[in-house]
Image (cartoon, rainbow, N blue to C red; front, side, top):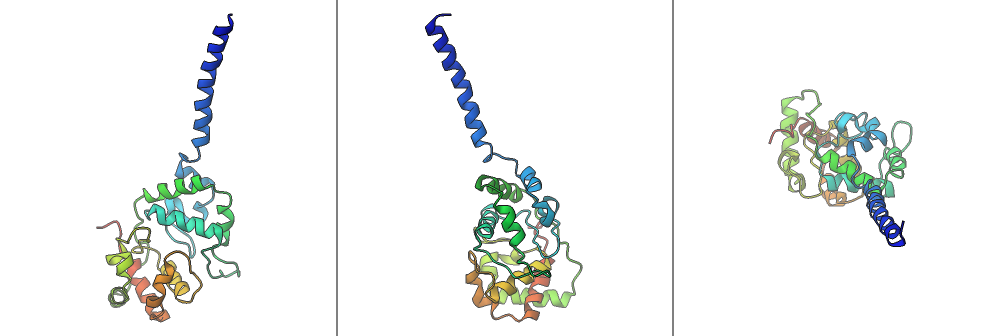
Length: 217
């Protein structure tokens, strides 16, 4: 085998190897968001396809990808705090621990996959019609609609859709923002409105939003 021929074969081999290496390096960015969601244990708290969350955790299917990604990043960094659960541990602590095992590319893949899913059907039990009406009135009067849209369905960019979210989670977040526990992202802009609401009024707003069917435009 002549030297020029050996050189040509070596060059050809490198051409095959280098693209393969590049593909391997790009793999996290193109990772399957669903596999990551399951493999990184997100499913344990947020439920199958992000639609059957347990306890006080939110249903996250169908939310804006940029918003979901920012929440993951800010929980990981400690910028998003929460109150304690019944055991005395911050509710975000478990996710903070997990997020340190999830790369930036993997977080984006998970957020993109979740955003592609249909929003969950409201799981809340039927609520008294009078409470729903009062909650709707409070929601609109407190200017929540300015950021989260009519019925909580059409939020501004990188804001969460709150229509159809779990009643317990909605009430908890409003109270924690009002009481200065949660301060991350755009939540501070909500403080002046939330501070006007009593616990009972917060619960009424949550009753209203929880029964909204976000799949119905």
